[in-house]
Length: 183
Length: 183
Image 1: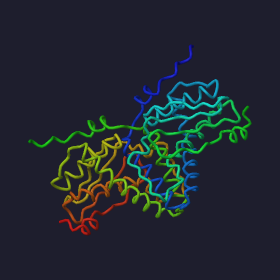
Image 2: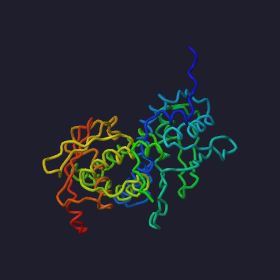
Image 3: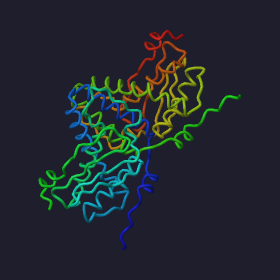
Image 4: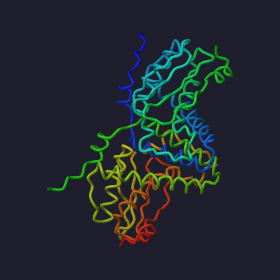
């Protein structure tokens, strides 16, 4: 039987169940606010958002694989493309592009054209250093760790968001994959 | 100029921006898990979920009024209908029904046919007493307090969810409206 062709992010997004994006935005804002109250330290909030995203990504990957028909990516470039063009579109309903590749192809930026997480968001000065959307980098990290499709040890992505004041920190996949013994 | 007719929940939901419902479900699950870790006491988690929902409802009502064309409700019965048939549909994408009215029309149940918040959710025995979806009652409370459209002092809604193991606690609108001096 011939392999099933991968579906586009638009097609998948159209076929799944939805909720109102504004409800999602405000719910996410409530999470960040809660973490700032409970943990007080911005650095701790960044870590916690990443960890929450990781836990989500570990589970979300099942839905991604079931709906997208995407098979194993041959290299990191293809992986980044799939994350940007299928993954973000399928879950957030917005497309992203991959840019800023470094010379050895181990680092790139994924740029969201429109980021629903930051609608209506205004951060006070006390939140300097907060990576407001850090949950997204955790989601990507968790999802990739589950599929273990990365071929590189020392590869990382810098995720930047257009229309977003907060830049994600670099995050390395290397330790995870090293630990898992993937080569 | 003739008043604009209220729009149906379906029509509004179709016209707003969306995100993937599974992403929302998992994000909400991450909130509850975080609160259980930070606050430890189930009762405190219930209160916090309600408070987070309240903060969301206070802001979400703007979107509701802007998109729905709903004007002032004449009585509590109409208010409950609008919450169930327009509000829930517009934000969660699922319809709800109003049942179990008491004899003096001050108490009813809003029943969601399908609740996206509880997909994939399994609670351990240590979570006895947790109102997993308590954020929803907070949203309704916050939204109603902003529009102050309730005519009753001693009215409350019990929100029940079909397909949901966790029943919302009764929540009284009375203190809010008393405080606001609404009659």
